[in-house]
Amino acid sequence: MPPPAARPHHDILKLKQAGLSDEFILNKIRTENVSYQLTTPDILELRAAGLSENVLEEMLRSGKPPAAVAGASVERKAEFPGLARVGRGFLGVFGTSTKDVGRLVVDGETISWFQSQDPEQNFSLYLKNVKEVFNTCVLRPGQNLCLEFGLVTYTGDEYKFRDPGWKNGDNRLVTEATTYLRQAFPNLFFTQRTENKL
Image 1 (cartoon, helix red, strand yellow):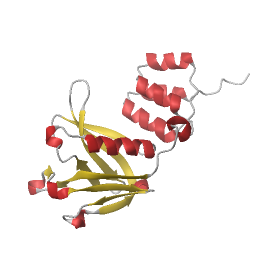
Image 2 (cartoon, one colour; image 1 turned 45 degrees about the vertical axis):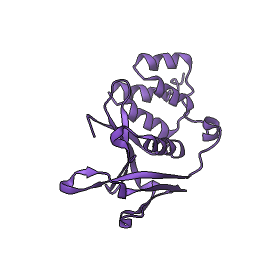
Image 3 (cartoon, rainbow, N blue to C red; image 1 turned 120 degrees about the vertical axis):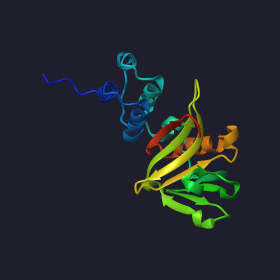
Image 4 (cartoon, rainbow, N blue to C red; image 1 turned 90 degrees about the vertical axis):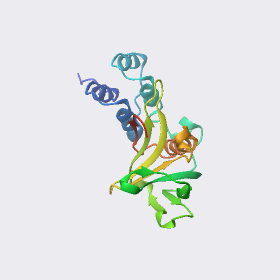
C-alpha cells in the first residue's frame, strides 16, 4: 500500500511550529504560489496550530491565476507623485525635506525616482534586483502606524520614502505605494520594521 501523499500545508505547519513569523510564512506562500487545496479539517488543524486568518486566507488564494484572485491583473505602470525621499543628513541622521519631494514611477519591470531639486539623487532599477520592500512603522496599540516605505537591493543599497507630512501622521502615499507593489509584484519579499518613534 503506497504511503499517503504529502500534503503541502504540512510544510506551513512545520514553519509555524519552528517559531517563524506570520510575515515570513505569508511571503513564502506568495512566492511559491502552491495550491494547498485545504479541506475543513486542514483549516481547523492550521488554526489550532496558531496560524492567523490572514495566513489561512492567503493559502486559500494560493495556486490560483492572478486574474482568478483579483478579477484582473494589476497593470505594471503606476506613478506616486509627492513622496519625499529620506536622505542621510547632518551627522548621519536620516531626515526628509521639501526639496527631496519627487515622484516614484513603476514602468514594467523598473522602478525609478525623479526629483527636480538635487537630480543626482534620481535613480532607476530593475525590480528583479530588489531584495526587500519594507515599511517602517511606529508601534501603536491595535495597529501600527506605517510612516515609511523602502526598497533594499541585493547589493545592499537602501531607498526610503515618506509622506511630506509624516510628522503629523500622514501616510497615504506610503500606504498606496506599498499596496500597489504587493498587488502588482506579489513575489517580492515584504517586511515590516517597527520603531518606538521615527
